[in-house]
Amino acid sequence: MSDTKTHWRTIAGKKNLVGELLQDKECTMTIKETKSEDVINIKKTKQNKGEPVYDKKGVVYFIGTDMKLVLNIVNFKTITAELGSPYIEDWVGKKITLVPLKGKWFGENQTAIRIKADIKKYV
Image (cartoon, rainbow, N blue to C red; front, top):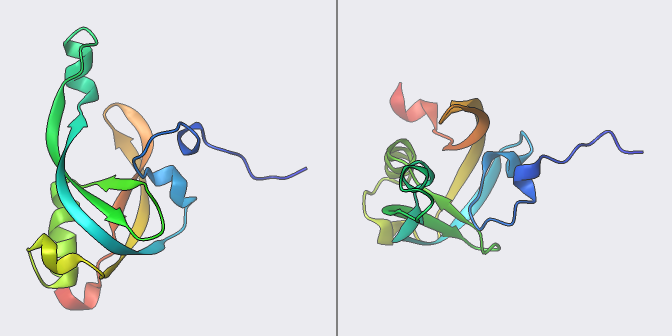
């Protein structure tokens, strides 16, 4: 019998990358495309009695998977610093490393995804 357990978020059938999929390991991926998309806002949808509410968010698609990473401001800024350009068109074909970060977000203990920064650039 295996000692490995499966977190429910890894099999929930979503198209978004979630921290639990990284299984506590870093993962380097190549950017295929970055664009703006309508992403459901769970909190606003609950407040709207279940009627879906969407927000425009930046998302990154990677080579080798159809899953996407919904970006927050922290990840936008880190990608910009790491790749040396604030222009999403310049990011195509570049590699970034995704890092799992455990914490409490939106009232739940979860694993978020952050972009690994080269600390030498900031010292």
